[in-house]
Amino acid sequence: MTFILTQIELIDLFFRFASVGGLLFISLVWLEQSVSLHLWISRCLLCCLSGYLLLTAPIDNAIYGDFRGLFLLLTELLPYCLWLYVFTLIKPEIRIKDIPWLIKALMCCTFLWFLYFFGVLQGSGNFHQVNHILGIVFYCHIAFMAIYDFQDDLVQQRRKLRVVVAAFIGAYSFFLTLLELFDDSLRTSSLFSVINATTIFVLIFLFLTYSAKTKPNLEQLKDGLPNSAPQGVVNASIPVIFTSD
Image (tube, rainbow, N blue to C red; front, side):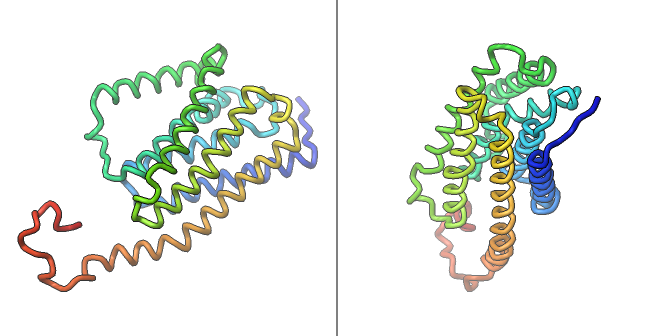
């Protein structure tokens, strides 16, 4: 089978593969020593975004073969991983053991259904459109979570990240989902595809630049906190559980 790419499609593929490479770098290097629930969800989010970039590339669906189901599954899980990412960002104290078993069971059943419908059936059914509507609802709630009680969040770095997530990732994903529902012609055009790939590449590059500047400062701050106060400054009457705070 002969497959010829136009110049604009080659540029599109370049930015998509470069973006996937950037996401892989974040997952393997920037998050290499992270074991918290939030950062494991971050890795899942990076995988979902990579799946979206590969699935929407200007390539005929037949070329993907069985991998199309995998990429489609990752793409359709994107709004839920993004929601979990923002939720654990706002509630960093939450742990897996704190989640009720009923919710864990529901999440497992939901994932198995997604695995069957999108991974095996490759989205052939009405639930595909229903999931797009659910995705829009989740994106709206992401914006609400990111903006709600913004002034009460005293962690400046996290406040900035909330705005980034709400204003860029959530809003942009919301726009793309609307296109899936209402305007398929724009979504499938070569010009829009390359603009989409370039936008995501630029956002990933800015995120990497921002992370490289802020992470060392955060680590230095963290290392300096235990020694920042003189010995004996903490009153003995303070309960032990609040001493670290």
